[in-house]
Image (cartoon, rainbow, N blue to C red; front, side):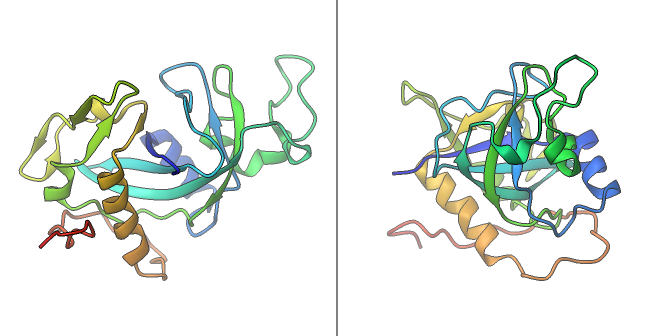
Length: 201
């Protein structure tokens, strides 16, 4: 069964996406790295899903859901750099803000939903989202107060969701309006959607 993960996209990354006019477009690639500013997509395999999250004014949004296609350099990546001055992935220049120039960056080809900033994670769900490590130990977010995320430190990295939380995020993305506002509004926390888990009421 495929796994699901989260990765945090920073203000700089999302600002660059907006400035380049990428809202409404589907990223064909993302980048894994070796530094905390561009975390390694450890454990992600073809078929797994990765939720790119963003925190703005303490509200968490799902910017894109990306299904991993492969993690190999392909012809679409362009010529590999010969010197440090050369772009690392010239074939993906339109999406370089996703980390092409990061420390030890490697391409991860994805099948993604369009970039958007209006798919909000409801506040009460935010308090119960759960991740698990390879030892099957689980954790929830720290610093969630009244449905808002006061500090994003718990999201900074690449983390595996529990199946239940992955299902909750999938339901939010799947139920989002197919139309994307021309001008993205400031996100607002909302009530939690009904759980999709079996036996939930």
